[in-house]
Image 1 (cartoon, rainbow, N blue to C red):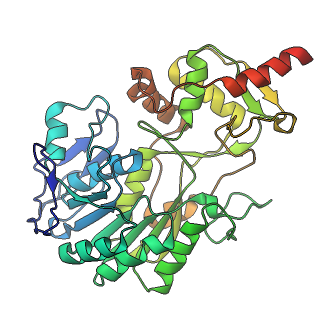
Image 2: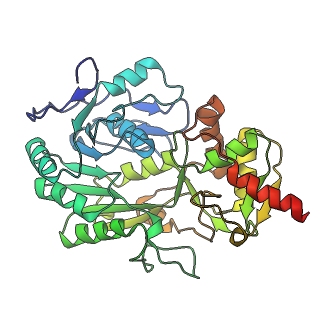
Image 3: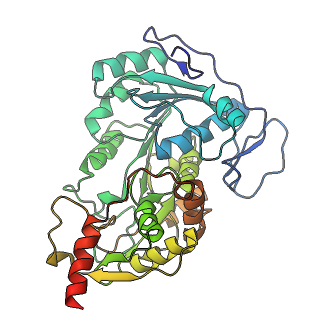
Length: 383
């Protein structure tokens, strides 16, 4: 890629030498407590929760996606762990971007080690040809939605060591018994049915795969209006409209904890052909989430307005960013089998998100209070 320090994999499929391990034994995301560790021949003192990677375990890794949110944090960790990382993207967005508050030298060091393969993953012939020519040990599929998008990757890489897939807890069938566990029934009519079909494909092909099912993900650079939806209203000093009682229970997981989980399953024999729910280990009500966001951003206690969604017609607009039901999953399997324990509590994680993103004046979507005004207008009439 001319004029860029991001190394590009050209269409002549030039092979690049493996990246060497980074000289530093520890690294952090902009001063947060997100810590990784690289272990050399001699043992070093490891911080609590550190991830160890032997020099001999450096892999040639392909990340499908990787330019947004989860992929940004995951690719950082993979490079820091000493792996050669190639991002497969359409090239419509910058291949890399600095983390909020990241020093220029740290960002440039990361950027110089990222390789880029430009293409459309739905161009199956190109996927087969380009991936077969490059050869990869491991694939992280962050943006795969349909099984047919995955099959060409498997065809191109018959000696693939591991396929690590980002699925969704949205695949579970709605149930009166909660939390959702990995063995629970799934919904073949779910809007995430493509992810279910992908898991089934990986199983049927005998691939060494690991599937991660996050619940709601939050954190800096989130492109979904999760915490941002609340922060907009808190900053504007507006009441927060919440459907029904506000006691619906849900669950959020921090993006950095999710990235850590993706690293923990890499090369882990216990994770072979397994599915794991990944999220925070505490649950929260909608009302509690609103108050947690206020605390994270240093705002006063918010005014909460409850409404019955059936009494309103919002057209195609979404009045609330969460599904109006209890929705949460057990993360005990990941804890017990892989030792994955979330580092971020809810308020702490929301504070991290606010300080590194919204509190800096950055957000993905501008505030839209049109549905709020409909709800509040009717509430005023009723009162």
